[in-house]
Image (cartoon, rainbow, N blue to C red):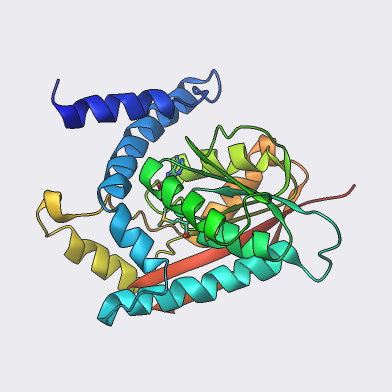
Length: 264
Ligand SMILES: C[S@@+](CC[C@H](N)C(=O)[O-])C[C@H]1O[C@@H](n2cnc3c(N)ncnc32)[C@H](O)[C@@H]1O
């Protein structure tokens, strides 16, 4: 076996989630698609970990990448405000699902939250651990390599998935949201790439590039119908829609949705 293939299969072992998700045929079909997609996403982020570490740092960036960083900053600040609320009294526990190199995890921990982060990419997790040590936040942040649908520990008060579902289609993402919501006691926040005319055009343009040059395709999602579908899932009984927020900055498009578990 080639060294790259050996590494990939070793990582597959490391991130094997507790799928299938349910016993229905449809759900098993979605879970096997999830596993295939996850494999492409992991390879992509492992190979480009350095780019992601750079984009999530203060290192100078030019052009499009700078607009992406600015848009991501707006989104991260909005999500942090929703997660921390006005009442950060005592410890709030947060799962940062698909945490990358931990930018949001560290922002939340610096504000007092206790955060568990999970990501497929070992390289990004290692970068996040280094950042946590440098920031003196290792007592408040724990990062793990693995599938975000099967994190160690929990439940958490709040679960967030910032841009972690971008590469999954509506079937896969709605399954993922239901799974993550089962780990959240109060609040679940996720972002998707909203299907807009402009993003659709960019998506079509992107598919003209040779496959080897492409990120795993971003899957634009129709937010309103997706949200209806998510809330119709019987596993989401007791959950209701909260706030929504959209950011568009250069090539960065992201739409956040908050779900709240009812108290009744
Ligand atoms: C666009 S990056 C966003 C990273 C981070 N949430 C942020 O906003 O800075 C998407 C991340 O989701 C992670 N990811 C995607 N699918 C995942 C899965 N099934 N389990 C864990 N991480 C996943 C990728 O490895 C990648 O780091």
